[in-house]
Length: 189
Image 1 (cartoon, one colour):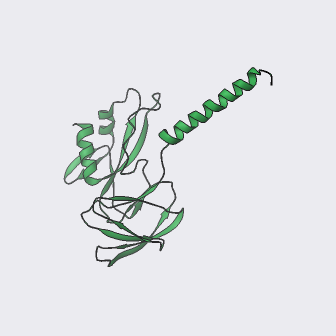
Image 2 (cartoon, helix red, strand yellow):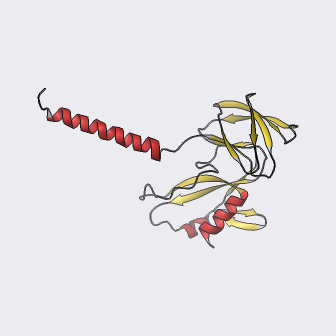
Image 3 (cartoon, one colour):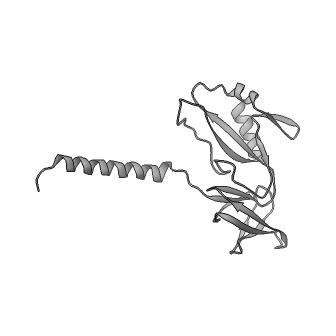
């Protein structure tokens, strides 16, 4: 076979493309999943869509499989007494099941070049938590299911700015105490 430079170039380009895709897929791609979370000191049992029984201990979260559309959940206390039987709708690729109906806060963090975070927070609404005002309008959530966030309770915000030409934002759902700790550490008012 003759030495063909264009065939070598094509082969090199294909190898580089596959390596770039592999790096993205294994290290950079954000995983999409659903969580059942329990921030309380109690233990709960649950069944999703009449499947097998799951158990979630105090302070734990568990990855679960949900289907798009209508889903059903039965939640039991530590004595396996039925607490409630409910249905919820799944429309997005990540979500959180709040089986204990505890308070969570969905916070929006802003990224961008020359961003004045203090003045931006002051321009947004305030939320009162335990009698204290918090800037940036974190949204309180205590229903059974939500998918109105980008980062789940077990993920952190991006450390790196991806597009410095414009201001972008990402939302994250926090357990109540985790949000209070994050706010105190990050904003330092």
